[in-house]
Length: 387
Image 1 (tube, rainbow, N blue to C red):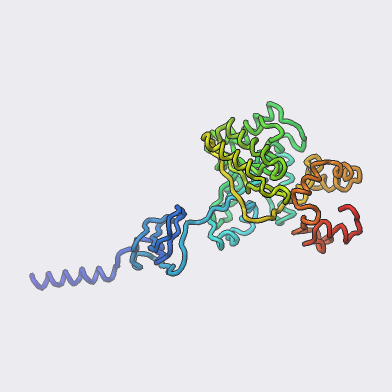
Image 2 (cartoon, helix red, strand yellow):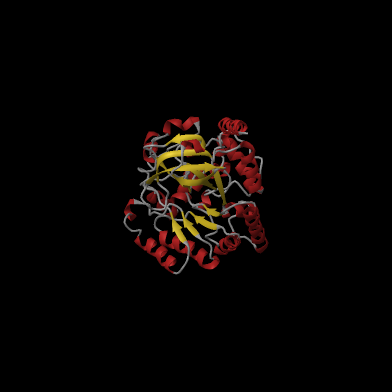
């Protein structure tokens, strides 16, 4: 009996050696300097990850993971959220999203000016044409869910949060008509917002020249729908220069009326002659926050900015598809009218004047030699006295 017991025990030992305990974690990150984003000082620890989630932070043996990463001397942090990317189509062109991943970005928020949906009427036609021109890319969706299905089909290395543009929704409903939306059209606009939210959109996001600011009731109606579904409203305020405080006031008013959280994109005051005068705008935001309104803002540390060339002109001169805008700007009478419009000179002044505005990217091969030149330099090269 004794011998049999020893034999059985030996068999058990052999069995344990032959079949080691299954690893608890898919990945163990060892000895990293953890910066957790809470504002606390960094600390050194191991991280155990299983099923795509962090399961433990502490001391973890190497044998506990199927894969071990030595992070000694390196910082380990949660993935960064990029609030302003315009990567809507680039992540479909290249799903590896190298420009994000190599900076530690794991979530891109898209749709900050124009959005991937909803696409109807003239918006669908223009969106398809523009993506084909820029990326040689074929658009085959019209809704938020359609875009998500395309993403999932192709695969993407990062997470994506989708916001939708209210001015694009209005254009989808009424076309290129520069007028207030009628009651029935507002109903349709609200339906499109609701559909987008139900399909996974996180909120609304308006461009510099949109959002219904000229007709605030439209913005209130769309924002109220987004608020019902837990959404937010992010805005490029209409002016970052001379009318900054007025535009901040309009953004705050949306929060007052609809109780939706408001986020202001790259809060700043542009134009050298206005530097140092952002105090009143900041005070307005603080006062609104003190009343319980949820107002936040982001900022970038540059004294430069990037815009499409059309942002230099009054809205009436750039209302329509790209071909129509080029036709308008080629008309001598239109050009004279633009030169007499005070807003044109204000925009130029806020953007650094003709000596400070640079053509940073030119896609037309015929004009490629002008890339990197200021408008003043281009005018001089062409022999024009008036830029």
